[in-house]
Image (tube, rainbow, N blue to C red):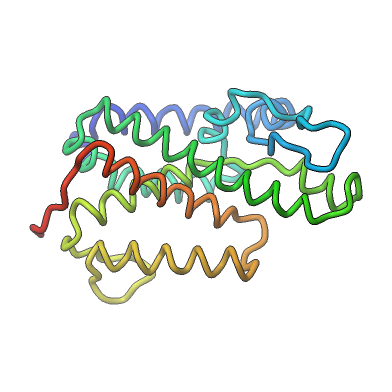
Length: 218
């Protein structure tokens, strides 16, 4: 089974695991420098967030808050990634992975900026929003999920938390609808639901840009 892991997926798995354990040696340093902080401070004398650094838009994807967080994202990459890399080619797959992660961060940042714009500038609530960073590969993983559902819509998935087989296209639609609902309703505070939606939307745009077509086989 492990022999079938494609090169980019294998390297991403290794990098994420290594970064997780290294970052735990000095989590304050790694979080302050490599997690993604919202770049804009609306209605503040400091327009640019001093915590933001331009490389965070990529580095945050390789940071994870817990072992469970890391495992859930890497499990999705492991299950779906190699099929997509084989279909897309390694170079396009890596580009797709990184750009969907960037798209996830940007959408989440836009919504955070909007929320902060409604708050009293420099209030405690305002600065709490400004200093809470985002970490994790979830946005890119949701990009992978939407690509799998788009390219292989009729493949039936047997999921641990779902008692019956479900076609990939229905799984992606249901999961996306849940994330939209959860984000709007404020369910699971601390989970960047709209970043997941950002990964889905960016993934769909990229699939069209790359000219990939749906596959109907099982």
